[in-house]
Amino acid sequence: MSLSRPIGSALKGVERAVTAAAVWAGSLMLVVAVLTGMWQVIARFVLFQTAAWSEPLIQTSLVWMAYLALAGAMRAGTLISVDVLLEVTRGPARRALRLAGAAAVFGLLAVLVWFGAELCWRVRFQTLAGLGIPASYAYAALPVGSAISILALAAHLLDPAPPAGEAPDTNV
Image (tube, helix red, strand yellow):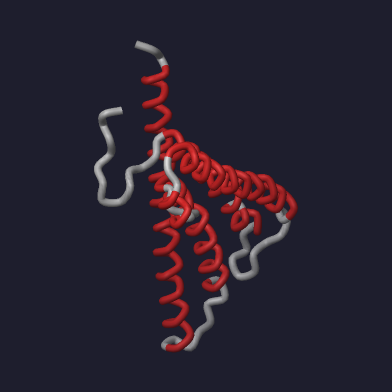
């Protein structure tokens, strides 16, 4: 028995836990945005008060939601799909098409990690109006979500999820 199987299953477990946590956190950010939006409407039209903090909180939570939940789409392989080309290709051509799409997405995610981290560094002394927190907290969604998505994309390439409605192939 080789060591690659236990190590591979351990890495797969870590990736699944990280991706699931990211999707859960992204879902939580959607709940935060919805509840904050409801409070904003109630405060403005029922209590006749303004909640200056609500709009930047909604924007920040929606950005975090999008970048964290992106990992789930990467893991499932549902982000970029050229269905027509995938339907007409078979064998090596289909694999090449999938790899080309994955390489393009990986390149985009790598750029987002790099420039997102640089953006966080540049705005580290700025604060978000209404929240009073460093702007880098909001912009950190780009490198953090993109890095998690790179992990999920690599996991999808190494262990693709079965198409919707199909059971995974256990005869590998």
